[in-house]
Length: 372
Image 1 (cartoon, one colour):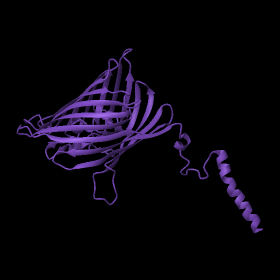
Image 2 (spheres, helix red, strand yellow):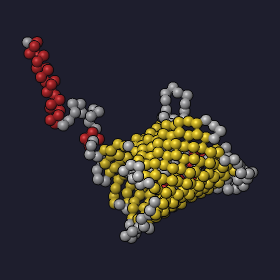
Image 3 (spheres, helix red, strand yellow):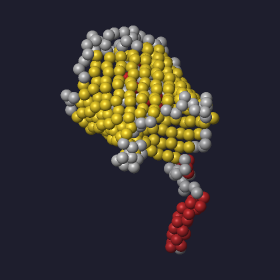
């Protein structure tokens, strides 16, 4: 009798997976295998990202290796009209529990839900990559030809700038050759850390993705126009109250351009910031030229690029000096378009408030980066 009961139990147990498989349902509804993305896997979910790792030598200081970024991307097409995408950033090796090293960082850099209505009008909500300048939208290491980001895009239009909010974006075609784009969002905005001991420090005041520090919402947007292939122009803005009481406003204006003709590229960006509570504004710009050569000479899809960039930032227009500018020369090699080896040398000059020119400091970078 016992053997008959045991045989019946084993038969039922072995049959369960078959029944579940036939019904295409997991054995335990709402378990870890009962998720919508599992059903869509291989058809509507994509996983990728990029990695960069660099060696830096600074004149008069030590050299170092830096596992700067490891960035996974996740994208899912829920329906033809609904898409979810995100970017998770591990910087400087991330965070190690129990370690005194606090250089690392793990954060959600970008996470949005897009609802497509038509090409000219779409909704976006979540942690948005703010369209403050062209560079912030195209900041990935494998995409850019130099290791360090332009100073104006680190200090005045601080890349990477991600903000919680919602709004709209779209594309128009004014003529057969031209394309116009826009993005405009309401976001939490910057916080009062913008005022750091009486100095305007915009990068330090990047706001929370959880809550707004005041009742005022900031407005950020960018309008782009390409009159023909090879010419891209853009204008952007960011404005909102930054202090806890909601009395003082920070406004940032930006302009960007890129021109491409054959193997030559010329690109640049200008930014200017005005904040209540400060006498002077901040402004800065960069101009960069790229020359691509040696196509397919080393490998079948490879190319070399020579780069020169000029950087300039004035941290306080109300005083003489208090600025810095730099010159960077670089050479990189792309075995394929999505992977790059970069070698750059930068010299930065800082001018203190008394107007005297400071000594230049040299830095050498070697970086490897690739999408995956």
